Amino acid sequence: MDASKRGESRVKLLVLGGTLFLGRHLVSAALAKGHDITIFTRGRTNPELFPGVEALRGDRDGDVSALRDGRWEAVIDTSAYLPRQVKATVDMLDGRIERYCLVSSVSVYASFPMEPASESSATHPPLEDPAATLRPETYGPLKVACEQAVMRACGDGAFIVRPGILVGPSDPSGRLRYWTDRVSHGGEVLAPGDPAHPVQLLDARDLARWIVDRLEWSQAGIFNTAGPANPLSMASLLDTCRAVAQSDATFRWASDAFLLEHGVRPSADLPLWLPTDVPGTIDDDAARALGLRHRPFAETVSDVHADDAKGVPQATGPTRPVTISRERERELLSLLPRTANSGSIRAS
Image (tube, rainbow, N blue to C red; front, side, top):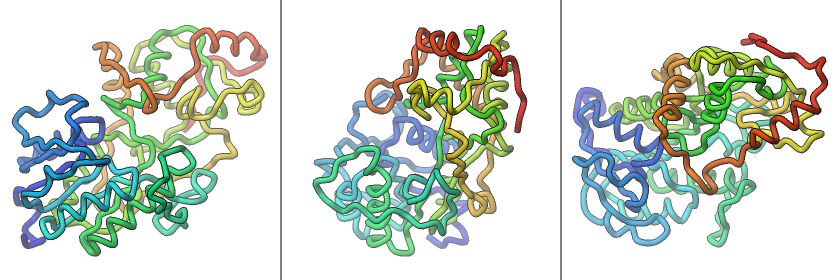
């Protein structure tokens, strides 16, 4: 199809993984614009979603034969973590796609998050070992290998998206949901680190909309994506959670040194907290110049809080961090000197 007309035309899209978090938001965004959608999943997660959408069944680690027929103008790959998964897919689809969008990660950057990341930052050496397994230390190098597999196979048809932290409704990680839930219950809340430390969060629905928009115009290249629209700090994140929940929560701020001394794990026990000596930020100017737009952060918080109110279950297993319990929080608060800041500290 002529790229100059693509933005006004219906596009045939194949989504590899279309029923969990970003995938489901991508399918919803594409359907809202009237595109033809096919999803390829194992059929295990939310199989009841999108009853009118063509659903192919298979497994990235085994049988991709369901992809042997059909032609698509673009593929959106949300579920590739190992280079062999990409190779099996591109080999099966050879000659029957025009564009391949791989959702990668800013974890490909060798110095991130200790240093800022732009698209020109150095990446990890690719991990091509077919016996490699997915672990925290291999995640970035494996994603680099996945990117290179797409670029080798698709050339100018490769569209690589490197998101930072994604949040929003249906997020299986529960990272933002930890805070919306905890703050909504009120009382004294253990607040981590420097209140002014920046936090970058991107609503997965905004990323989904941008990816679909760009594929309408046959986008290619490599792009970082981050958010929100306005600078966000840990203090303003917690204040927004409190305002949305109309909570009486107060915040006791514990220093990085205190938390680390007491064995609290950054970004895990207390999600989204990173010490101030981990200053890395994501430069996504190129994506913003091509139309990446962000809803107000309060809207994201409100929709995540609504998941709690509706009793939407969170994921279990490796996709969900093990956060501190309320008992552990109370223990830490009891050890925190009373000279520590409390109440609200607003910082942007």
